[in-house]
Amino acid sequence: MSAVTTFLSSPEAVGVWSLDTEQSSIRFENGTMWGALKVRGAFTDFSGGGEIKDAKTVSGRIDIKAASIDTGLGTRDHDLRRSNFFDTDHYPDITIVVKSGEPAGGDAARLNADLTVKGITGPLPLKVDITPLGDGGVRLTTETTVTRKQFAVEGNFLGMVGNKTKLKASVVFRKV
Image 1 (cartoon, rainbow, N blue to C red):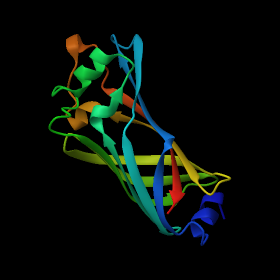
Image 2: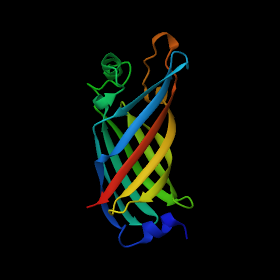
Image 3: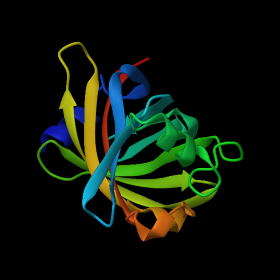
Image 4: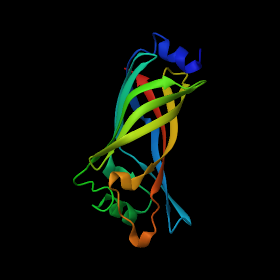
């Protein structure tokens, strides 16, 4: 039995979990200048939670405030909030909804999730590494690539912005 199966099957894991935002990060990376440079940033305002019913029944949700985008350059962040990118006035939230999951061997799990950006929902299969923390929490780390145009994130001055965006999350959950 894998470490993840053992954890998910334990009575201590069953129940409702809350996202610890102070110990978590949601970051991204995208090519710009025709791939010569990388723009890195983070979303700084998010919340979420999940529930484990048994080793095969997991669910969860993370709500990200799109306007909290932070690349370290205010003018770029302002542009990313506009209608040609995230259109945060009309679509304030980005959501990740986990519908199910299964152990993937060792300390990993595969999550069947959906990503919603600008009101458009698409599949977001995730492989996550799960690390139980000494204080009762659990850390999930993942990295995946999404195609931004699939979600109508179209801004692309002179064709400089790449279509593939790497998402990186390290999120800590604590049992409620």
